[in-house]
Length: 503
Image 1 (spheres, rainbow, N blue to C red):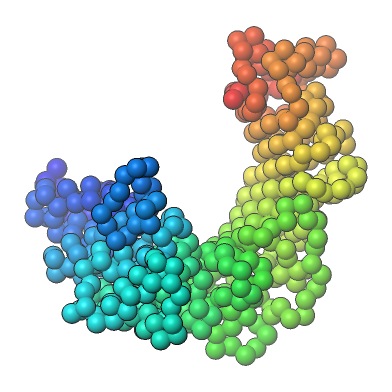
Image 2: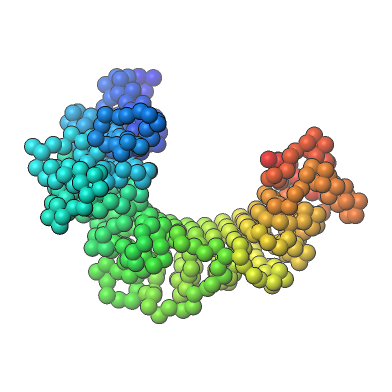
């Protein structure tokens, strides 16, 4: 194994470490690759030391126990682990290309920045402003309000600490801030990192509100993920759309404006010339809303010449936005939201798609059942030629009536709500290309009741029917031996059926 060619060694190390980059525990385990021999050590060092990690976690203190550390509120203790010092000890700070800060909790957030400073062994001789952070944390921990001067000193200190870290890790091209902590001084620290690394970033991922004055305009920035669940109206940076290849935004609709991509551009056209994947998630979704926004003259013309993957999650779209997005050369489209918007999307040109997924939530929607099925029939009549067409339906009130269903191009169907199992079996011939069915009926279907449905189906219907259905999975139904045997014999009705699962 030690005599393997260098290219093979590098591939092994890559696959052993690529998934460890954001997990400090896995990263430490991968250090063993350095011990094999000189060739392995050379290759592993270059890959392993390319990722600097600060991993914070909050552990609750058992009742009656005390913890002798500053980073506690007597209920929980904040701890930080990092590989930055180890990277620096090996004179490899310049090798680091990716910088990850992880903190998935929300407790002790006022101590977060000071905990990072301590973990990175930054003291007052390195950065005199550290004392201001300590004083601010002391005041916050004791429930004292900071004076204006103290707040200004803390903000400056957060900036100085970030600049010091940039000097220690000067070549970061991928910045990943995975935390929901919105404490103002920590955000100042992060935004300073962003602005300092901005000119060389190729990837940027954050859960934090980004200053609206931040300019993510690097010509190399290809991969951007922003999850910013804040209550303010606008909290989005300016982003250069030209180099983007992958973009994911998980924000509030009130935060989002297409104008955030208007960089060095005064025209009414915004081009995403290299964007291949776009994911838009809006967090304040009203699952039951059937509202479709009308035309909006304030939306610029959007051009996506290379966009092939589009994922929209409960996104209230204007007709302009739908038209611009659907002009892209899409191959994969995944939409979750209301029926009216899904219908509007399917009325566009979708013939070039290879994979279409529609996820419709009908909670609190008051549409006459006949109208709803008619709209879905019309919607799925447009899907001819698409290799994979998936529909997920979720509802809770009326029993779904499948009598008038006609979805000839549907290949995958997932149901979650009250429905009549017998009526569903009768509808399968009107879905002749269906290959996968997952059903969770909120009606009480015992094993005996399902057996009765199958007995009635065989008594009253001739088979086999024209169906490609291969896999069925029932949720909330116990698969007794008798029931399994009955489904094994269902090929008299569904000739291509291969498996039936219960859970």
